Image (cartoon, rainbow, N blue to C red):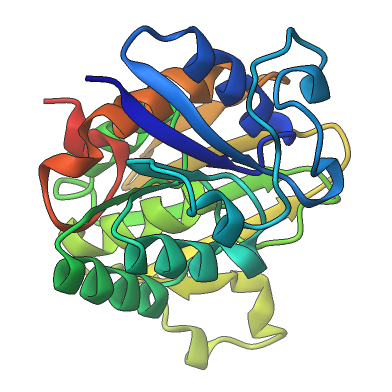
Length: 265
């Protein structure tokens, strides 16, 4: 039996690549496509491909009127939480690829998903290599007490930090020791220059032209340093395989799971 997939943000950078991938997969079925500006167009021709026989609709509510199993969201930080809760209420599993969710949002989504008995998987980055970067950093954290996260993206990215950096910082905070760095409250000068604290980890966001997405965990010990870094390319290809893995397995467990590494074992 095929898995019916609704893609929200179907004409976006990652969404359009997912439309093609889902339509080509023998075990998946494109059950719906949401993109407000392209509403009324065929999902295939709207992204420059062949006709797929699925009409893009303007809202998730319209897409949920048709049978489906999993909703995939690649939209905008301001919309993703509402989309997730709307899909959960309709009894659909959810894969969240949009960044911008905080810990309180995760708690609310997890509570709603458990109450409804559906699975949700959110990841700051669905790239397999970015997931490995996070895993290697988590392996190092118990042994090197001092670590900070540097998050790079284009000048136009609206959310800080990126989902990759936020997820990494929160998960590092769960396993790392206390830092030896001076407390921010004891510093002289603009304290903002020390970045923000997320999950007990300091995070610095750089927004400049020329960057797509990069994230690094910088560890420091006496007389040595360790940097674990992931650099993204200019296409959405790296995120497709991880997202499809999540689509295939998100229904295995009710509630919210954060991080693609949950599925790599």
